[in-house]
Image (tube, rainbow, N blue to C red; front, side):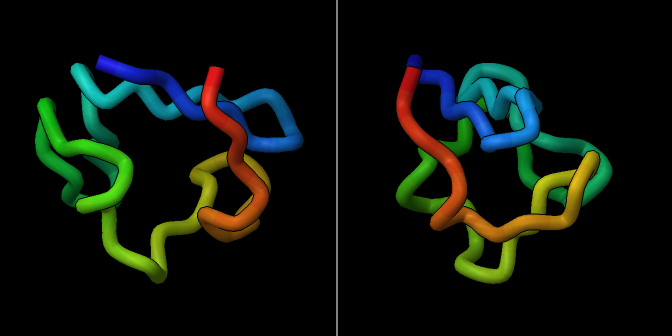
Length: 51
């Protein structure tokens, strides 16, 4: 599973998901809601790059 990193350094790990935004473990990045925001800085998905 892939990892995606926000410009602030927060890492979204597909294997872990993001519990604070109700994104279940195993959720692929393309299936993360478009309104997903970084839990640290609040930026959107367009500010993430694949690691």
